[in-house]
Image (cartoon, rainbow, N blue to C red; front, side, top):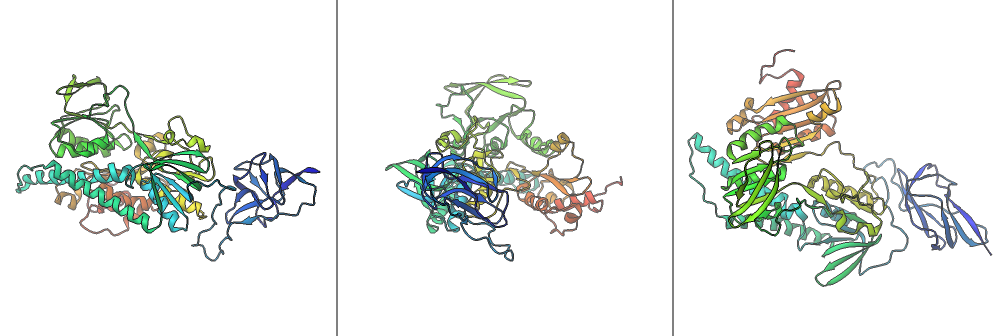
Length: 586
């Protein structure tokens, strides 16, 4: 004879209202005595509630997110009539002593019940080997996990290392050298017009990429991370199929980290079969130097590539749909950049769009629409740089039960968990900003959380940098955002025209701006424009994370003469103590 038995949360010590992070069974499942039913996670331990006897699950009484205490009903179990012994909830690993706060504060989160094994099994499967993916894989391996890294391309590194951050910065360095050599003629040092050996420049750029990716392969090997090369798509909550050169391989996993990134966005109706229409990947191949180049999109990617092609000899035109370049930054930061490039480029058209591109024998004919739209023009090449779209719909995440939005994003919480508790997501695929350093941070968090560390995404800001000439960098609250939100701020702006180092390098058009809370005087945001602005912004990120105020920064001795002093001087302006400028008393 059988009966329905209420399975309750047993004695769990002093813990109360512990959230359910995983339900490991469903109605109709047969369970054996001691099989895990649910997983709870407190501040100090992750624990499983086991079944006190064998039986069949008839009704689940809890869901992920519910908070349970001793005596809470978990499910109804149909089992043979018998005295049900009190089960004991077991932590997957004892919590560390309070006297050792630097040790990981929580044990590993265990995966759900029995997992059907594939051709390869992993404690942690990471899909995608960009900065977020390889960071997650390497960190998980360092923490003792058996890791499988699935990558669709033959080399590791994703978009950033292969066709993004690294090759673009190599070419931008070359562009800067060319521009500096050209400008030195104004100071009595003339190098003459440079000879661009495009094949040799391309070879050098490819060498920089190869060295980076080869290093990643070595790091994976030394950590015993198994790399499976092929296109991976989920088939269930614990399985992914990878189409490799040698056939389909099934990879099963206890935990997964989705780091599948994003792809170039496209404008419908353009002639994509014409090689003269490039995306950022095509532009980085550097196949030739077009006489006339049209860049569609005045954001960071478009302007960085415009910087490269302008330096090597192309006549560049930029078209932007909005009313300003790099829309995310404050307008005063963009002004020096705009002023410099409008003298160099063939044209910059704001509030303008390209409505048509026609392939012709002598080039691509662009038709424009907007307030100041030019007449139709023919260009040797066109670069389309209108943003990126997440790859959420390309990996069949729905087959694993993972929520994917209409736009292809995969929502994740501050612990990087998706709606499926043992599947995590990081990087571009979970939302803006689509930046490599954000993905790396999230990848490390996901790996540590899987390994049982008490972690959460709580960064106060994510810095942004445009590696144009001049560079533009910003972090935290922008002045535009402050006005929109009605935040009471005080800003302090130091012009680089008053910087000895900027004047000595003949690049004094820049500025550094700090934004403080008017009441607490704490730093809320910062921005700078000028050479090496991307290097300067890190100090302000740290200051924001540490809760520094204007006095803290203004009393920190900076080396002289440096551009880093501009942060110090801006803080002194806020404090009213600057001597390098005369600031009338307010």
